[in-house]
Image (tube, rainbow over all chains, first blue to last red; front, side, top):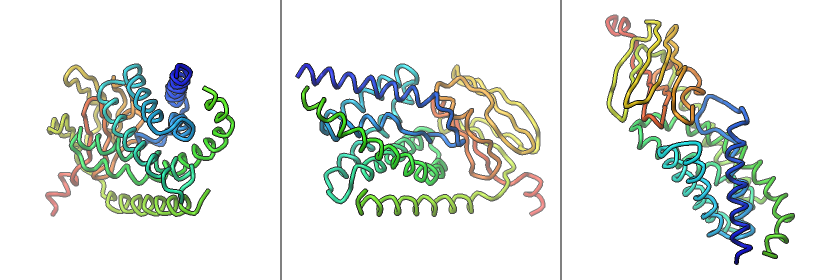
Length: 165
Length: 119
């Protein structure tokens, strides 16, 4: 049990570092919310190796800690909405055998953006934010696929270590 | 990669592309006015024909934007995420720059006032 807690703490720290590293990567398409989604790499790997409850916990703790450190309350609100929706979609798709880890990761990336846009629309009371969605969907599909491919490479390599804990 | 993944990716890409061109076709009109809303309330409107630098200090927040040749860009803000500053410049009707932490929206509205009179 204590090893499991240590493992969860390590993954949370890793997800936080990924969130930070992502800010340093100067990808800017002039569209808010377009990013690699490196932190989702951790959530996907944990979802497949340690199970859904642990993945949800790590995702939520990461968002709260990152928002408290680098952002503010508003950022936390829309990140949590994105994180919850993203996790729900991924946990659901993982249960359907027709989808592999790539489909799961793509759905996670896109639903994160959908959740953020919905909350942002509610916060600023402006429906035209919806016009960001198509570009974010296309971007999310590409980055989601990449994250899925990388996760598929990582999981077999870490499964043994995590099982022992 | 399984069949379900490919179908999912294709469906999302198609929806995304369709949405992208739909948005593009709707936002083709050059705007005449910039409307600034804070917390859902219209704060101020600005004429796009007039080049100007505007500093907004609302609720202790600071935002600075620029109107030049009918193009609006946020040049400075003290929000933590800086999405509004990184946002590409806007010029067409319905295009927006949002500063979410400050609940501020810059939105291009309506045709220019001169064109309205012409109608």
